[in-house]
Length: 65
Image (cartoon, rainbow, N blue to C red; front, side, top):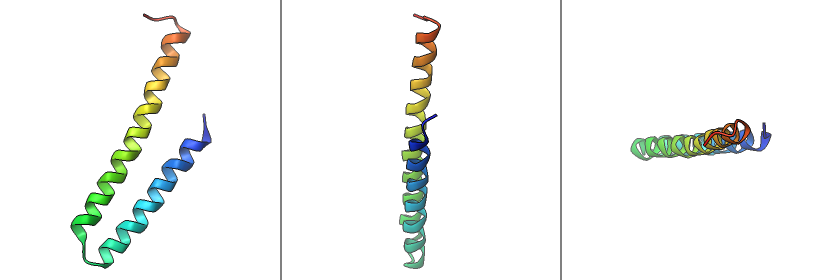
């Protein structure tokens, strides 16, 4: 497994946490929630891409389709 993806996910998490705390302290709870949801969507897209690559590898290994 590539460790690079773990660092990318951690970087997104740290960035979202910092921005979230700044927005909460500024009284912008709505924007803080939107930032959190945006970070979640970004990470989910990264994971979906990895799952897609896994299925392509399985198909090629077992010569499916």
